[in-house]
Length: 231
Image (tube, rainbow, N blue to C red):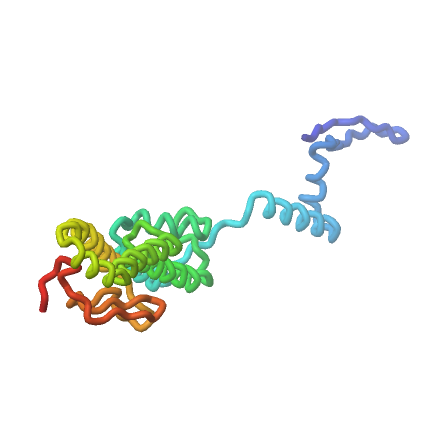
């Protein structure tokens, strides 16, 4: 970047040799980098600021002791979920904060990370109660369908009784489908834990009361309609 020349300088009768350093355009910045003037100092600061922005600041890593709450939350997350192992859980957390390792999460962001993991725990727990396969909309759709099956079957009890008087054979034939659909609805309601806002199960344990989420209640139901023993 520089070129050093030895030049002969003639001054009166004396011959003098002087060294001159010539900087190329590419290396002229070195003058400011090595100079001790105030302007050179400002130039060096300007250059270093640009380098910091281009290269990026080194990532300050947190200490293991600072991550204890996050580790505890991570352990709980893995314990609460059936289909998420430890490494997969860490991967989800790192993706959320754009890090390659949890020790790169800034110290001030650790409480946020802990809150995020607890949100995941609640999310996965809710999904577990809903069968683990459905989002909230699908869960509600299945609940409404189950309630519709039960409502239809029990709102038509007078029809079944009339059919029993008219044609007992046909009634016995059709009742099989009613009982099967009721039993299936009961099984679905138990698997997906369908309850009213008051915490009442859709079908009580004795199969004698049906509690709809809208507040409607059927009481005095014969358990045999659920293929269950009478109590």
